[in-house]
Amino acid sequence: MTVQPHIRISQAGKVFSSGDREVVALEDINLSIASGEFICLLGPSGCGKSTLLNAVAGFSLPTTGEILVDGNPVQSPGPDRGMVFQEYALFPWMTVEKNIAFGLEIQKQPKAQIKEKVDALLKMLNLQDFRDRYPKDLSGGMRQRVAIARVLALDSPIMLMDDPFGALDSLTRRNLQDELLRIWMEFKKTIIFVTHSIEESIYLADRIVVMTYRPGTIKKDVSVTMPHPRDPSSAEFNDLKKELSLLVMEEQSRHHQEEIKTPAAD
Amino acid sequence: MKNSFREKIVGNLQGFLVPIAVLAVWQWLSSHAIVNPQILPTPTAVLAKWWEYLMPMEAYNAAKSGYLAWIFSGELIRDAYSSLYRVVVGFLVGASMALPLGLMMGANDRIYQLFNPLIQVLRPIPPIAFIPLSILWFGLGNPPAIFLIVIGAFFPILMNTIAGVRHVDSIYIRAARSLGASQTMMFLRVILPAATPYILTGARIGVGTAFIVVIVAEMIAVNNGLGYRILEAREFFWSDKIIAGMFSIGLLGLAIDTGMNRLNNYLLKWHRGIESK
Image (cartoon, rainbow over all chains, first blue to last red; front, side, top):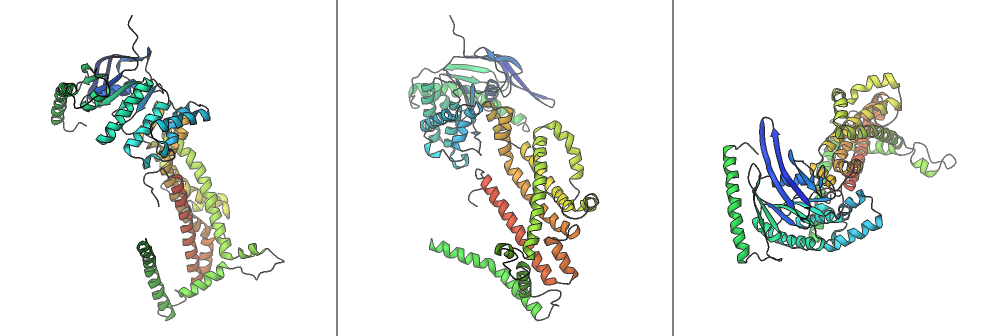
């Protein structure tokens, strides 16, 4: 009777070793994500949330356990899991249009079809006027729109987002959050979204997975049931914010202690 | 608007101040025989010689050649053409060897380890040190000169291409992999353009080296070209022609560098560092 989850992470662990030092980045991560779910991975820096995302993306596979997407183990990066990076990662030598089209050109789709898709995406993300511009001429918010459009072009069912709005000012950030929610609802994407902003996670996610600091484990898996659009000034929002703050701050102070003990470590 | 225009004019005039002063002192020194005009001819004499060097040697004769051919039959034009020809051919040959090798060495560690030791040994040898060998191997004329220019252009392009490929930001590689790029796509559409700023820097240094080498090579291995001409002028004690030749070399170098700069700006119009200049 149970529906097979879209993404299943079972007993995933990741150990980084540099020289004689070993860092357990992830330990015994178990997570099932249903199709169309919006998951936020929340935690202080160093808690392994990006490591987990990179494992799902296929950039850096777990050392133990496995990650299944639609029942198939993840072995390498692929266009079925579109990735949006905090640093945008747009190709600076391509115009906005070319950046969005690149994934489709890789798939050797017909030119007319590519143009049609790119046109629609440019329109959807309000980028029409920037079609022929290079990324260097765009603001951070605009660049991230292009990066999102580039992933949307692939029609991938899963979007992986590594703190994509972390470098943006708060107004632009809210703006893009709303657009992301709109896109998520319209296209029924499954989204895994890494952030260290508690408010951002509550504003966006169906489920917030709070992670512990080294080793990275799941501290708490919180469902958010408030309907969209969510009001950050509501009592419910703030209660949840308080609850999550306590959880995250515990981990943050462990992070801080660790840093004092070993100032040389990154 | 008007103000900035005026500032621009004044700025440009300022740029002429020092050269004019230098020319004036030079003119004064040599016309008052404070220095021997045989050693340092007056600027006007140099200019006159330069004009003579530039202009056709024979009077125009419609029966012998077309007007355009006649206009370009001056010694300077032919010398500049010879030198430029050697630079271009040598540079193109050097670049067409350095670029593929550099791309392969940058992209593949095995190939890098295979070739790097030899390159590290050969690279510090100045191209000029290849002169005896090049004459021994290729005799006199264009071949040894072009060989030297090839060597001069090869190493800067090679080293910069390797560095360019190796320094491609891993975020672009990751983004392209997640978009599903094949090896070929990755190389042609990501690594190659990402390495272009380095490659063009290498090309610019390579052209510069080629231009130095061509002058030296012409002094030794051939009997035309700008380098040959100024050495020849020394034998006749034509100091005015030596200096006129030197200025011509400088102008040609400036033209080549400006051309490379234009190409650079065109190819890198996406690049952050280059805005309007």
